[in-house]
Length: 72
Image (cartoon, rainbow, N blue to C red):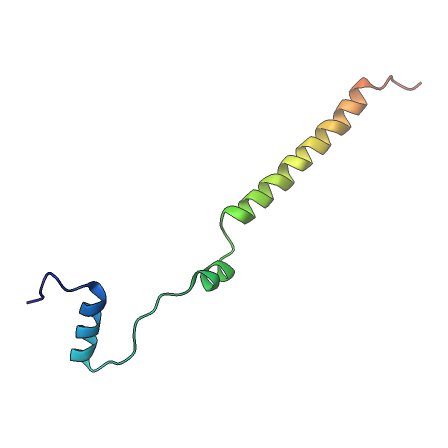
């Protein structure tokens, strides 16, 4: 039975000693994780900025066409 006062790290070390394993389980670092995945808040913000800039440019062109007098 596991003692309730054992910390998770101590518990992991105990299990590894029983299994004969000497390597520790590590999580991937934040830099590795962010460089391998292509989705997130920054790419989404960039895409939204580009899209809004395109809409504003289109609106400016249409506005210019609307306010200019017709040429004959």
